[in-house]
Structure formats: structure tokens, C-alpha cells
Length: 264
Length: 113
Image 1: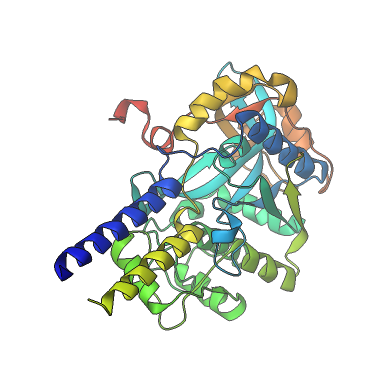
Image 2: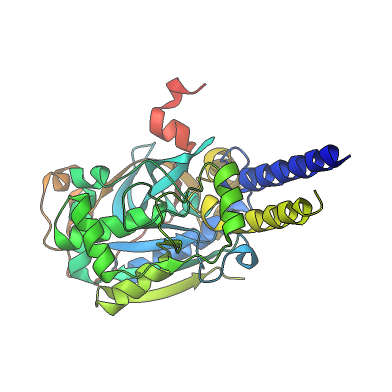
């Protein structure tokens, strides 16, 4: 009796975790919370808003999960870097727009990430809420980011070992937001040395404390391949869009920070 | 067992509730949906323009940047992008999508299983 109860609980646990994972990180199980037309209109609104401000490079975020399910202090679930670009359509027509540089979890292998470039309509297709946090860096930083993204350093900064709770102060694992932080600091300090980048982050960047219990962390790390805690010593902290925004504002690296929401 | 049940239940609930912040965070979402969007959004072109599959994106310079990339972009766009910082930029009416799953974008369609 006791054994069967335990078995039922264990099955429920695995099923729930599996369901959760597939609902969020599997490209095959795309959950589109909004019509394609609405996503497309929102993406275009974001582009126009930033183009009007003359932004060549900016940080862009999305909300991939219901806000109510996000831990305290975490407002956005993914951050990338948008770059003003010439986009060539398959019919050969060249047009101006933004391309977004991302570190994305690999489909079917969530503990591995890849560098992928997509467009705003792709970026927001699975967003739970059509709202984005934006940081426009100071023009000097935009220029440095532009140069870095077009250099070999950009690829070198990517660590494919993904953990959602990656510690931004070491390079054992990396998540999408930590990658963006590494790119920013590499651009600012003109270095591709990861140990130096981490040292600068440790000196100046204040990460988000993740308030989860030890039991939760234990089970998360046991059952979810994209949650690892072995890179932490004590308090779990990670980089988020909001903590990067605070970092950039504190050191006058940001020209403007804004939130854009979809029209009703 | 009596002591373990609440422990497992608590772990179940809490794990399910914390994972999203990160797990779903940087997951790619476009895949199949994007393929649909290329077609579906095209029907509502009046709202935001047709969705067009973009194949190549060449970053346009910010002020002061020079490099080999400049030769790859059209002169008109290159000049526009090189105007003083903060100068408003033109944006295409079309909505672009990669039209590819991340797997396709990364490895190419031929390697798709």
C-alpha cells in the first residue's frame, strides 16, 4: 500500500514536470496565446517605436509564462539583442528592420543552447503577454555592441551548457540573459576573456536572488535537465532583464528604458 | 510514507511553479507556428503587412562603424543607418519571419530527421 502510494505520487510528479516542460520549452508544442495577426502587429509596433527613436541596437525581452507563475523579482523570461539590419526576403527584396540575436534552448535538449537570429514576429510568437521590456543603450555602447556582434568574440562568449538558474559569476552554465550580460561587458571592456568578463560582472553587476526552497531545487535539478545548481555556492542568483536594466542605469549605460504593450 | 507524501507534494507544486521562469524563458517558440504565421498572417495583411520569409539579415552600421559588412548592404540603407545617433530609421511594412524551426535554421533542412 505504501509502495503503491509512493508510486502514484512519483508518477504524478513526473507527469506534471514533463507537462510543464513541454508546455514551455518545446518548439514542437508551440503554445500561441495570441493570433498570428496580433503578434505580427505587436512586433511591428515594437520595431516602429524603436526605429522612431533611432535605436540601432537595443535589448529586448519577452514574457514566456503567465506572470503569476514567475518567481518574485523576475518579470521577463527571455532577453535578446536587436540590431537594425537590412533584411533580404526570399524574393530578393531588401528592406530595413530589426533582427534579434538570441541564445535559445535547443528543441528536445533543453540543457543545451544555440545562437539563433530571428525577427520580432518570431520572437513574440510564443509570448504569453504581448508586452516587452526594452533597454536602448547609450549610442557609444550601441556601437560597441554592434562591433562585438559582428566579431568572432560573439560566438566565443556563448556557452552551450544551459541552466535556467545559471550563476552569472562563473562560466559553468549560461542562460540567455547571462549571455546578454557577457556580451555587454565584453563590449564595454573590449575583451573576449571570459574570466575577466566574469570578474567585472562580479564587481559591478547585482544579480537577482531566486527565492526557491532547497527541496524545490533538489527536485528541480533531479527532474529537469535545464535546472542545475552545482554552479552556485549558497544563495541562488541569476541574471535577469530587470537586473541588467538596473546595472545599465546605475552606470549610465542606458539611454532609455521602456515597456511596450500591444494595442487592444 | 506519511512524512514523505507532503514532502513530495510540496516539491511537485513548487518545482512546477518555479521552472517556468527559466525553463520556458529562452525556449524557441517559432518552429511550426512560424510556418503557419507566414501563411496565416498574410490573410490579415491590412493589420500589419504580409508576413514575408526573410532569408538574410545584414546588420547595418551604427555611427562610426566601418567594416566589411558595409559592402554587403545596399548603399541607401547604409547611408540611412549611418546618420547621427538617434536619427529616426525607416522600417519595412512587411513582417518578416525566419520561416524555419530553430533546428532548420541551425542545421539546414537537409539534416532534418
